Length: 383
Image (cartoon, rainbow, N blue to C red):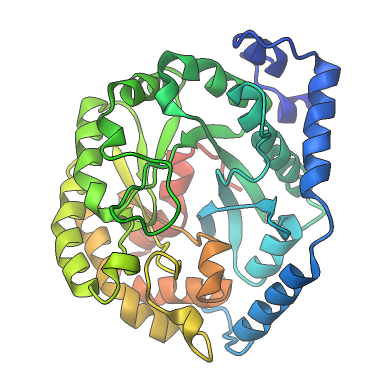
């Protein structure tokens, strides 16, 4: 790994952490990060291994050839982690990608390598450093042509207000690939999953004070929330028109818990809400992320066999078509959201359904959605 891989030219990691008043030396800091990595790299428990094997067997029931394998792809959204006895690392995503012309990928914050103690800049920087190491290994070429995590999106608690600045600087120092943060604000009443969020967090003055630092550092913001919060995102985007915002997973349609069996009602509410979001020129949309059974509730994971690309498209098309219509192809980027969406389909089936979805678009419009929008928004060199 080169010095360029590990540091930005603006600030060293030790200097950034020092801004928080931390007295962590470079040796002590490195040791702590290594200890954290060792803890999460423990052998996978038998139960977790058995569950992973069962999931793989389920997915293996539907195998499709890659259609249009020549189309260059930048996967604009995926995760890597070692947590809860489960690993999804470089060799795993490359195995899933196999056969698809994925040129580059964008890693999105997962909280998998955060330390449990110490100042936040030290806790979140561990994940960026870990992913940066994976990216450097991928960039070496020994794993093939795909470049994994050429852009890294980290984390940060924007409710820190001005105190989030050293958190951002520490991550910038940790990797030249660092592009922005995600601070999820998803809130429902009643909850659909454990949440530590509050209503209308995007309007909180402290949150907005922290948010104001993103543009100053040239960083983007990944918006992960639920469909009933989309108007809050519109108000945030209009208050900060110079900050690039990327909407994750179509704005979080819900189909579980109190929303189970109400998908038509959700779609009718979501449709005008997503159109309002599209009126903000600084917001881009990620098209995908509907395979999370624990949120979207389409139930693919409950079937004896996973869906084919045609079956997947039949359910997802109306959500995708409307999003692309209101944003336009040049403000849309396709995403795998792996491994969460792996609970519903294989990587090839997923991208086959995207290719079928976009058949009627022009060559340049398809290039935007598969590759060029992500390359522009995340400021990537062509690979």
